[in-house]
Length: 141
Length: 147
Image (cartoon, rainbow over all chains, first blue to last red):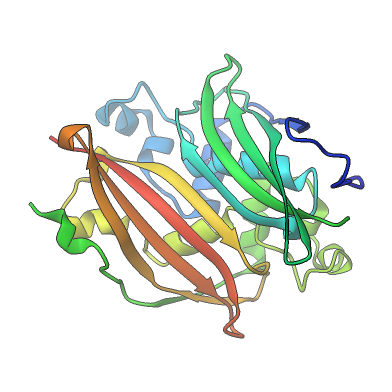
């Protein structure tokens, strides 16, 4: 889990540890539909997805975002995360392997807290960017 | 149709109970391995009141409340023309199992791009817990293909 993170020695441009997720499965999409409350059939039923102009079922964008959130919480406690946002750039499909990455983009001291700004991205096995995001995390000095 | 009339529209306030089993199920579904998302005692040792809601779970709270994509139906836009464009969270305090969370959705902006080919709908929801403490603010952008 999380090791001691030193605000003073972290530099802009430093990477945080990558997270490679297990391949997305149809079972996972079904479980996430139930767990997330998003029952849109484009994530569950190929015929419905094709009727919507897709090749087949796609992963929930919010599942991809949940993966990206884990690159933060594998690195530091969840309570340290102050903000987290993403833009949904491309879709993920069953079988895709998602890799989540983060790079320090800013360092701020505010109200006695050391805040790190991070640029985040999630990409598939072909290097196609699925999500582009940002986060702010508080790090003890 | 003039969608601008919907800017600043607010929807009915809602209340959602955060259930422990649901949080465990959500953590399993996203492949989250950390035991704080499964075992209450481990979560408490880590300083949480109970099992914490993962970072993106607040969006599911709003889905359970029938919010977020409901603006499409309200505006008469077919769901099949819309995609989730952006999602943001600002965290004030952890949301934990057994919390009772309240919120209210507001459309904060609507604008067009590419000469009207794309319509952007921006909504915000602020969530508070049973002690009236702010826990999380959500901002969602829905992108609609016109025509």
